[in-house]
Length: 134
Image (tube, rainbow, N blue to C red; front, side):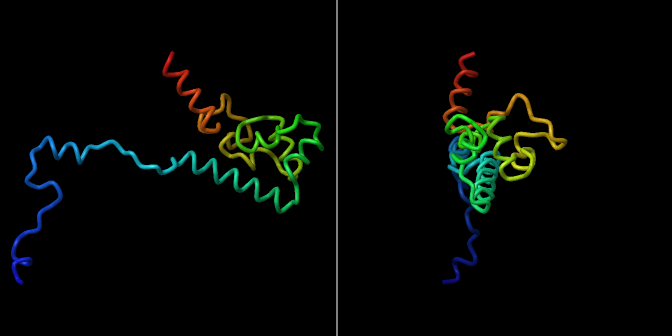
């Protein structure tokens, strides 16, 4: 009954050979958590979609109103597209740098070239594969 209080508690991995400890302590992270950049991008998309909903605007309506090809505004929400960004910002009566903070510098200049984090997964994977091949 009192033995638990007297004997020291063993830490995880105590008494194991060093090579086994290294396996457990220095294991590569395999979590499915989203990265900070990905989370920021998704929050940005959600914020823009929320503003569009409050203004009762649709992305197809913005395409038609600003004479853009079908799907341009929808793509601009998720990926950098200058004409689509400007049309959405104009429809919301604001400036693009206020909507897409990850795509513009603080002074309003557009970031060129756009970082890979600003693209969807499929595009990012193909960019990463091209860089690895080079």
